[in-house]
Image 1 (cartoon, rainbow, N blue to C red):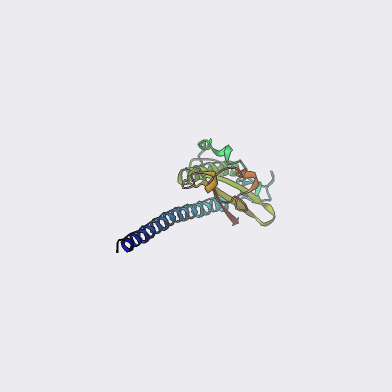
Image 2 (image 1 turned 120 degrees about the vertical axis):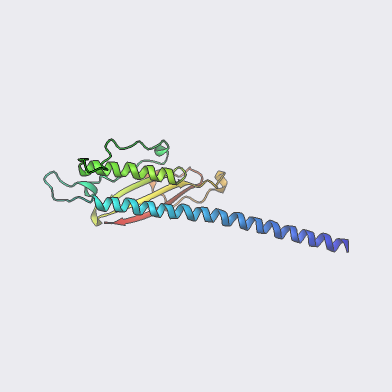
Length: 180
């Protein structure tokens, strides 16, 4: 009788441990989903900013705005470790007189600040695809639930090579193609 009680207690303890690990995993996946949703909203934000400042290819001085590559940002993950400096000109009031390049610089600085504030160690990588009037946008962040390098997810296709994230444990990347 005593052995049956001990066996039943062992089975109950294993069941409780299994439930605790399932709960921990669900919390982790919930946080990961929240970060992906934030990345999606941030990608939509920069997409709208690019559409508003698309520019035109046929000006006297050449292309301007998005078409001139004013939103391209190709800095490594380590290079984005510091806080984002504000744009020299805000271009946010009616009295502001800004060129399309200055507006793009202000948009990019404001957007990078948003990414940095809303995602843990949030970083960005933006490349314009001129042949199709589109931009490839990667938003990267460090997963705070990955504590060690041996727990890190496989870093492969989602992160661009220029982000140089190969040795960064816990780095997550989300890729978006923004068509203008």
